[in-house]
Image 1 (cartoon, helix red, strand yellow):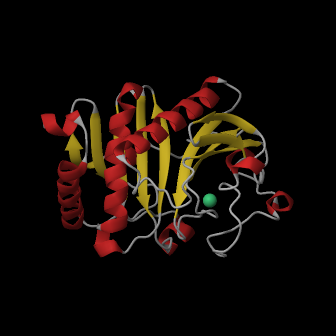
Image 2: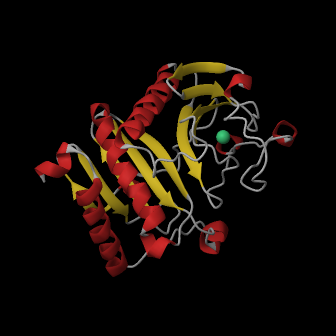
Image 3: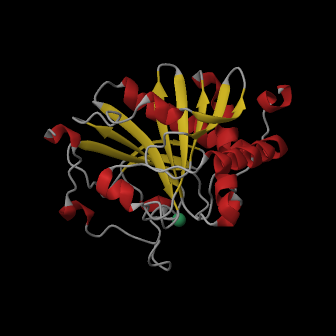
Length: 267
Ligand SMILES: [Zn+2]
């Protein structure tokens, strides 16, 4: 394996990084917006800025603060607020991609103690990788699976070949102009993961974005302790077919009840 595959963590830079997930009473730098520096752009209460605590070599690490509300989350935003967030983060991500300054540009978010995140305040990360192709190990079959919902412009499925497992949902739109639908189907999926999946066992999730041609894929990953099969052998796990069928059926029900989208009305 060449060095081009590895992200190098620089410990010196990470020192002093606040971790309010562990120390709840700690000061939140994203609430204290007056003290923010290196702001790239701003829209309403959403702020795009360079990460003060840059920890990875040969990268440009940026953050988008989604809301002024410290306890905001995709699962509790209004339909409109959530669509606002998705439109804005897509715009920022696309700017970095179009700049052609990076080998690849990643966009993702952490939520909850099992997700790898260190700050509660809702934010996305957009990371430009100078030398690494962040999509190198991703294959088309990581985005296909058992269909939950399918229409002309949008597909929701449960991964049959998850990147890590156990449960990964893929929400795909075939053109960026349907970003409002991507936001809405993802919002209901995230709510389903936190409220319903395995009777509410999950308090953490990740969202990862991928761009494949004109398609935009949003992968919602329910997070739990990482399986040793994956850690030691890179073997991903998924639930059995009956289990996945049950999950798909309940999520479809939630989408029909809660998703504000013409796509769902037409189906
Ligand atoms: Zn905060």
